[in-house]
Amino acid sequence: MAAVVAGVVVVAALLVGVVSLRHSRDRQTGVPAVAASVSIAPSAQPAVAATASAAPTSSATPTASPTPSSSAVPAYTVGGPAPRPAITKDFITFDAQRRAEMGAYALHHYGSSDIHIDPKVIVLHYTCGSAYASAHATFESDAPNMGVKPGVVSQFVIDKDGTIYQQIPLAYVGRHTVGLNHVAFGIECVEECSSGDAQAVSAIMHRKPQLKSLVALVRWLMYRYQISLSDVIGHGMANDSPYFRDLEGWKNDHTDWSQPQILLLRTKVRNGQ
Image 1 (tube, rainbow, N blue to C red):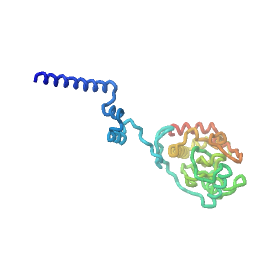
Image 2: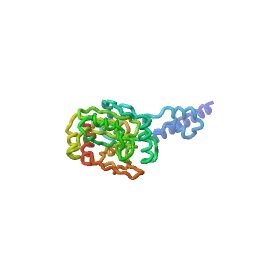
Image 3: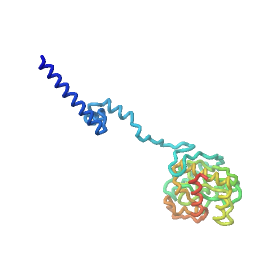
Image 4: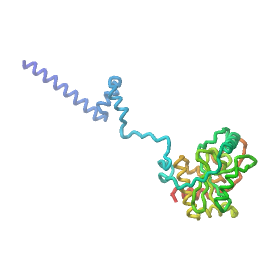
């Protein structure tokens, strides 16, 4: 009987030693016993595997929403989330006829009649006029430009008092910049152009309500559509954009918002001023 008891004690001691050794190895390797069991025999632990996949660890990266918020999306270029500024919709007539004209233009110049914009660029312009009303009337007229329709139109016009007017729905291509219409939003600032580009942009920069609205609109479009600050350009820079494409071989001849002026604006956009 004593021999039997002694044997039981020996066996128990051996089992305790094995368990202690296993726990020691788990601590040294940093691998929990459950994880070790799953990795050794995953097919034998379906319930544990399912639980692990359904409950990711806190270090897992959350899946981003495929559709940015209409008011702000997480910042990825400069500053922080950019709220949507106040925008007054004053749409021109963008009916079936004008959409068909835009489709024909897009087919000839970009190889597709689809007039839904794929925004990659923001192009700045000024109106060469003293009032918003004249710019809107020009866009509404649908007058041929360079011998073809549709007429010119930018998505936005910013008046001298800072009011932002939207001219067409943002889903659609406008005609404001050769080679970039299919990928670019156009922003017009009301300003005369009789004194040259540097003077015209300087006047816009010193007009606080207009500048504030311009910076706010650019920042919102950047965040809403994930457009890089380097792709905020002036009409005078359009031919050098990596997105420039024109199957007819057309080029821009405008010099409004050339590079020195755009560099000044980018600084203000970066700083949120």
